[in-house]
Length: 99
Image (cartoon, rainbow, N blue to C red; front, side):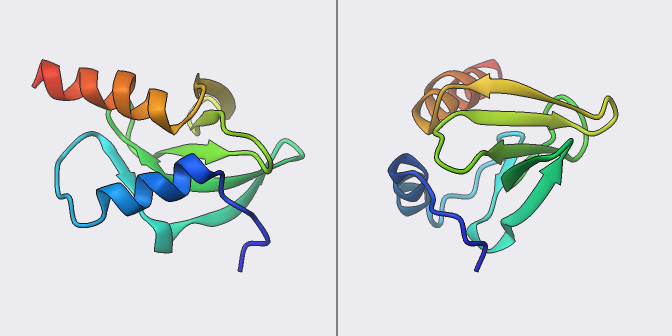
C-alpha cells in the first residue's frame, strides 16, 4: 500500500516480536506504518520513539537499513542506528537493562 519494500531485517523483526507486550519506550506497529515526506526526503514511519520525547518518529528511507529518528519539536531527522539489529541490541536492550 505504501509502495515501500521493507528490508529483510524489518520483516524479521515483526515476525519475531509479534505478540510481545513490553514497555520499551518504542511503539512499532506494522499496521500503523505510513509514508511521510520531511524536508523533501521520503520516509516510511516505523512507529513512535517516546523514551526521550513524546511522539517522535522512527523512520526508514526507501532502499536503506538505517533507522532514522525524527525529533518533531526540533524538526530534525537524525541517524539513530545502522539497522534493526542495532536497534534491538543496543537501544532497546540498554533500556531494558536500565529498568
